[in-house]
Image (tube, rainbow, N blue to C red):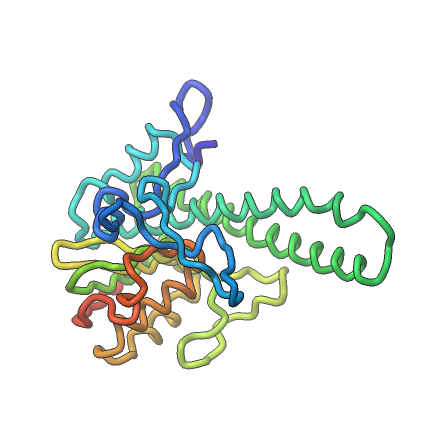
Length: 288
């Protein structure tokens, strides 16, 4: 199903495996000689019980069936075909794509959870099964609550997209010089900043949870990490605490942050470079 607000029969063409990460520049920069990138997804464990690193073909990496070919090309042309300069339109589209990707993933998670319902309720009603059902129901409730808030956020972003008004999100762009070796896209609901100060409580499903979107992009001198968030979000405090890190540690720290924010949706060139990253000459630009 195409997630474009004008999607519909007779409007969309074939739904494709759309990339959540820049395919024409980011992915091409981190492929190896066999055109593979490294990933922890799909998850599997080695003999020591650790997540295994595995190669993924770059054309299959970071894809989701969230847009038809027509709308994927139309909407994200400024990210795929134009040099990234951190314009309001480009940062909006970076956040919009991360939002759509997260909405797609959460919807899939909810569908898989419903498949588990019959399985969990089958058999005898012993204590362990009762605990499993309780945990499963709580998980589904949290996914449904988060999904509804994502839908609400997307409805607002859709309106801005159609009207070509790109002020729905605030953003921060962090630029790095040097070779790009890590790429990701994703969303997180931070409950603490990097100094340990509480930003919001995630336990109460009745409260509105404030989200933050993150995407890596390329620039003419290296790479950029784009953080974007709805204007009512806790994003500014989270990213402000992030850039207080010293310049010598900033690039390596961002590698860790990407794994925290994007989890399994992180791709990289080779593991040793995650600790080194691009050179630590970084500049942050707020867009309010």
